[in-house]
Length: 484
Image (cartoon, one colour):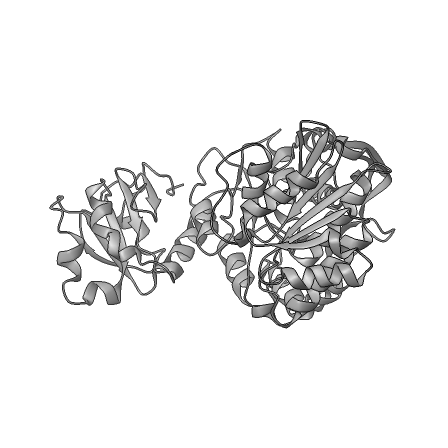
């Protein structure tokens, strides 16, 4: 196994990335890889990526000054006038220089090679909603028996996934990686890089419609995971999602199905909602049944639990580990997490992201959480990348808020008016549905409206930064921020 940081030489990495050796010592030992010149470590290889907002080539000199052992740059940059002089002007002795046609493509190619050097069972998870929670639940189970690698935060794209894969070393025997996308072809490329043993799709919903067109386009993009999965790999699908199952069936690959319907292989029976304390159910598979209790509320977490259980059952994880791992899982900040304020006020923080599918599921869970007679205050931010469906999706969001029996509704963002009009049209009183312009104003209005025992629910797309409102409700004085 040659792909180990602290042992691998710079020369060993040239062929996997289809690079050209320019200069430096072939036997230079590399201690890691980084794409941020501010955090690059001594002895690491600086990878100059070119993005829409930045160009890593502009920071090559700073990376070498911080002790980078070498750089990977694009050929067109290196051939440009003054490229070499500008990059290595720090005077550090003989750094490694490798050129490639495209640094993003080369990063993926290196990660694919790196993955192939390690004997790990790798699980790839995608879907319109629930993929992060499913990943974390599965990792919570798998970590009970073997060291498991998982991607952190938003490291689920063409940069983050390769950077996660190159963390594989002799410690790991399992890896659970989520895959995100917003255009056709991205899941196919991520699958090519990760070469998973198991491919999981949680569901298909109205997300990234600007790049994918319609719901069928989303399904086709997600199912690229099935298409590109090795013939030796295992497909795991949400069997309750008819569009997903139909689209995936075109590739004639046997699938393990999870869900609530009788046709699924992994099912939940006797679901008991415990409100803010979580959910319990009987996990059923191949005639066997095990009692499961989760600490995370929200009916959508039943399906997330089933997806994680299906992964682990296929990997022959002991059922007792599945039960314990799901019981241990405490949730993820910003993903339907519950906190309590003085006066018995409950805040459900679901601010990490939003799309119509996840919002619908979250509002259904809020309805279950709310005790009879409890007042509900809902604060929503705009949902992004919905293309031609934007206005309709936001009107329907407002309609669902009204149907929930919400006492007071606040909306922020360019399409806040569409949400408010949807709520009013569905019967909500105008004086209880209002638009706000800033995070500060939203906090102020929630504080003015909330009473003892209220339940407050917040959700928005990532770019709306609605976590600032959560922080404001927790008592922070500095949440003013910019206009959303």
